[in-house]
Structure formats: structure tokens, C-alpha cells
Length: 359
Image (cartoon, rainbow, N blue to C red; front, side, top):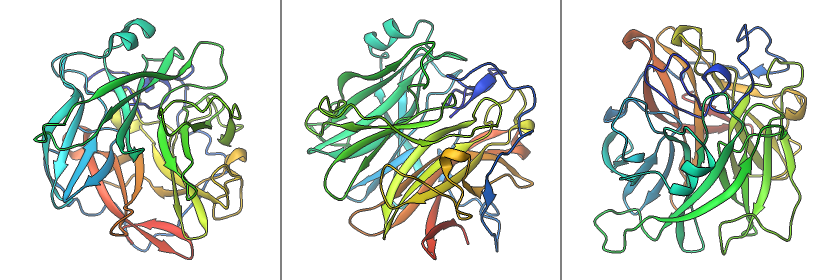
């Protein structure tokens, strides 16, 4: 999740100088890691890049499968023509990807433009399926602003050749304003085993939050006003945590997050990472592999930089309900190409009830 402060090429939903919706820039990214731990690695998860086709520039991807086609939804990129907001990529094999449209081909919804003055793109789309509709929740904000919104758009199909294909704007789901203790960006939908639907969201400030969704409307459930606090990083300047993704596997719920800084003025100084914790409830408390609560800054790092790829993050886990695949899609910066932002898609393996990537 990040908006590149240098403004060379990207918006994503990430933090601080480079972040659309966080507090003032930190002077020394990476200077305080807090209570995070690191997963053991037998191999480098970023050692080999396997995807082909239209896989860059990509930020903050999320994926789903309809039939034999995988669809990836991604953040808007600065520098492209002012149209085709929230681009969509397609693949038949999870390897070769092509552009196959966008959600808003002509313009952003007027209500978003009115709510967020100066907005130039939409961020961090999250794709899910419930109540016989595909739902894409997305964020609208601007650099260093807490004036942010989460919106919803729906479709009965993802196949652009289907006559029924039509994205319908459902409007605002959640808003934050300066002075709130949260930022309304980085939405993620989780459907629990009992069919209840949950919106997890948040970037910086006091961390990751969760509210219940009415499955019939896709909006916040008015009969449940409870807001759950899932993860934060007390003691780390600016609370750099965002981009939540929640899944259920086996006996546990797993909360994936992006931590630290994705979009500093120079890609070489980015220190974004993908981390995870688990709980026996969708509402926490989540702990890392050392038992540290994520509300106390815990989180087990699954992805970090190597010599070629920097700042991996913006990840979304996807557990395919029909074929059993466990996947994670994320972005990383290729430092041999001046920090070009590439989409990655890797298998999630489960070892002793913990996820691992590329092991």
C-alpha cells in the first residue's frame, strides 16, 4: 500500500511520506522494528521470479478465480492516462497475465471525488464473492491525508465477455476524517465458516480494525457497532502497519499485514515486509510464532528484501474454496530495474500450523 513520495510512478495504500493516509513522514524508516519476529527460511522466497506477461507496474494486488480464469485487481498507477481506474489482469494458469479491463474505465465515482478533494487514483482493491455477487472494496485518499473512504462496487460476473458483465457502484462503506484514530483504507473481506462477513481495514494511526458487514447490502452491519482492534505497533514511530488480509485454515485464523515503509523517496530505502499472526477467533487476539500479541507489535515476517527484490508487501492471501489452493499475491520492487513494481504470486505452505512462502 503506497504512494511514492517522489511521485515517479506509483500510488498504493502504504504509509507515511509515501503513504496516502498516514501521519507525517518518519525521519528514519526501519529504525525501530518493535516486537516482530522472523520466520525461519531454508530458501529465499524471492529467489526466482516465475510470472510472465503484464505483471508490472503492479501494486497491492488481490485475486480470485471464476471458472478457469484467475482475476487480479490492483491499485492505480500515476502517470497512466486519467481513466481505467482499478485495472484488472487475467490468467488461465496463474503464470502468464494479461490486462483484461478495469472497474471504472471512464472516471472515478463522483461521490469519491467529492469526498476526497485532490484524489488522483484508487487504491488497494479487494475482491470477494458472497450473496451471489462479486464485491470489490477499494480505498480513496490522498498523500498524507486521513480524509479517506472505502467504497464498494459489485458485479454478477468477472467475465468481460458475459452480457451480464457490469460494475455497479454501491457507494461509501466507511469514511475517516482528520482526528479519527484510524484510516479508512486497505479494505479486506473475510467470510467466516458461519457465513458472517467481516471488513478488516486500516493503515498506521492505531493500526488494523475490523467491522461486521451485512451480506445482503455489503455495507456495515448496523445491528453490530462493535469495532475490533486486531493489530498495532506501539513504540514504533508512526505505527507502520497496514494492508490486512484475513483467512481461515485448519484450526486458526491468520492475519497477514504489511509492516514498515513501502514508498520512501528512494526505492532503495524502502523496508516493507509481509508479516503474519494467528488466532482461534476471527477477531483475535492474534499472536506471532513467538507468542507476542499483534496488539503489542508482534508479527512473524514471511517476506523481506533480498539482493534483487526490495520491499515485498501489499499482500493478499487467497484460499481457493473449490480446489484447496493456498496462495498469496503481493508486489515487490526489482532493484535491477530502478525499483519497478512487479506482481508476485506464490503458494502458501502450511508447516506446523504456520504459513510459509516458497520453502
